[in-house]
Image (cartoon, rainbow, N blue to C red; front, side, top):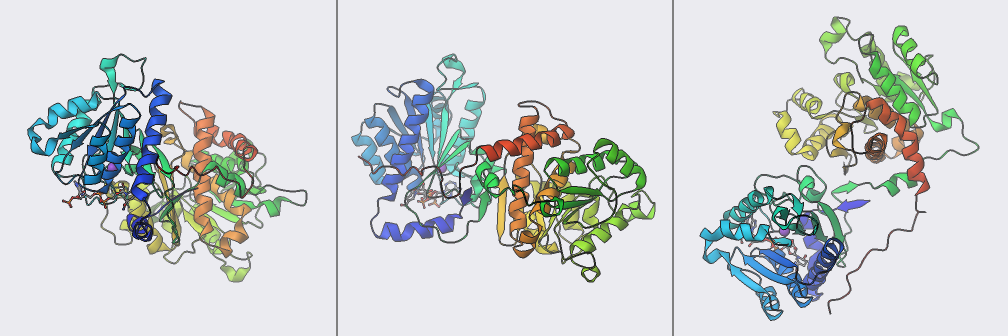
Length: 546
Ligand SMILES: NC(=O)C1=CN([C@@H]2O[C@H](COP(=O)(O)OP(=O)(O)OC[C@H]3O[C@@H](n4cnc5c(N)ncnc54)[C@H](OP(=O)(O)O)[C@@H]3O)[C@@H](O)[C@H]2O)[C@H](O)CC1
Ligand SMILES: [K+]
């Protein structure tokens, strides 16, 4: 799991160590230089003679870049620092000059920003040390001008400079962000101005939420978290599950298990007009290993479902998780005009049973997945073991129906903020689908980026709802007892769904049903590569600088 802490939490963890004189900047910059050497050597064969440009701001982020530049210069790379502010870190500047690095004081000749950007774009490696945790708002001043010019200059190139096979004229610099790409919202992932997209981000002490949250997450490249000895005791602001986390928590059945211990899923999905959603949702649940799936729609649609998935039953009975709404038209008019095929009524009954209503006649409370046309059935004190799975448009409608003045563009610009708002307003755990799927639950948040863009296809959401329903049914008692775990299960479902899409057709288009059919093999692969609890990849602690 990748855990991300806010800038304030990281700074608070740095303070006592800085006060004790722990050389955090040296540790950070040495680790940064080590990663750059690794990247260059892997792509270029040798580091000798590689040309490195440091973009240096006024604070310690620039100090990291300068000290890393000094290490690289001592390793034989040609290093030039471009200063956008006269207040560049003095110790770092001295170290770089002593190591033979060059310095360009762009702040003294801001009119040269275009020419300098052109040179920078043709270098082999660029370290973006303009701003880090100290960023306030989008980049401004000369830093903004330089990044805007550099983004333009890099657009014309095709291949990373380190790719020696490509003709030099077509290459562009390999960009390494120092701590974070300069100019992103460190705590919320906002991108409100120019940002230099990174191929790699080397971040110190812990990941930051902006590296996991869209849209900034899309500009961070591959994130390397460097341990500089910080102790972060508060819960992380945002988490990202990794395959091993899902594998370790997957409920693998044993000899004593039966369909009710494995979890029975009740599905209210599809209508006579949209029977396909019922097939996709039930298939998602079956392929995720549900103990049994009960389809609770019309007889006509039930026939279609059983024809496609003979494992599904259509008789009523005990359910350990409900899935309500995929393929069901939303809004009271759909019900008034009978377009919902009676599904609203069935969905309401399912949610009442799931919340433990009917005096517990239907058994105790159980988790529920509420999607699409089911969202309108949600009341405002839903339990957190209800997981809603809207896309940005549906979440916008849900928020506006509760008085929020928000548009889809706002939700897409700050997905976690609005997912959290919807959780506050409804009580339900919110899984907001998107290129990065964010999940907001009670005191917990996840950001998952596992699926290909091809997953944005009709029916994929229905499959996810069924897959999630099966995963919640398998852990129903645990999720009701520990409601924050509904968010973890939802994030896990997003990971499996995304990876199944990659597996269904690596690098190409996928049909929703094929995603569902790829789930069993993806789960088997996750389980086969599971590391036993307690072992984790050796955290690389940067050796103290020479
Ligand atoms: N604390 C440590 O010893 C360690 C810190 N690490 C590194 O340090 C940075 C955080 O450094 P800090 O000096 O606190 O701040 P920054 O360098 O990130 O930025 C502050 C300067 O940037 C200017 N600034 C702020 N916002 C913008 C913006 N939107 N556009 C342009 N410039 C901006 C700001 O200018 P002012 O005019 O407001 O002064 C500051 O001058 C952290 O990210 C790490 O890289 C080490 O990693 C560990 C040790
Ligand atoms: K930076």
